[in-house]
Image (cartoon, rainbow, N blue to C red; front, side):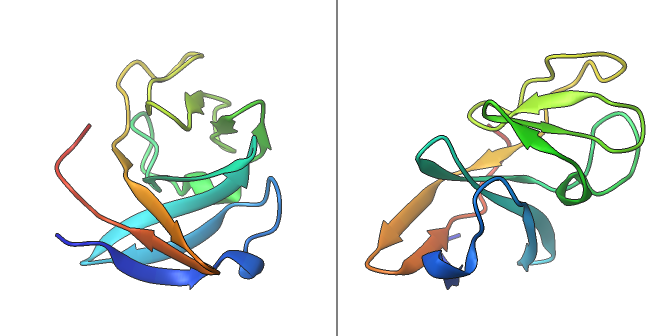
Length: 105
């Protein structure tokens, strides 16, 4: 899938996830650590939205069981999750945030 504009950069608050859908894929957008990240919005341990969790140190924490995922790689950094979640490429063009939903990373 090509890059698609999902929102304005100015719409993203620091360390506050924003849920969007791209081609029926739920994506959590996160502006943190001086970058914007796009990660699949569904926890690999429990079928819940990661965008409802907390963000700290380039990690997003699942609100239900406390698993954390690295926003850069999607890898879990805490149990009970053991499987990564997909991450997606992000481009910033002016004030536009563009994301490409590709195969799992």
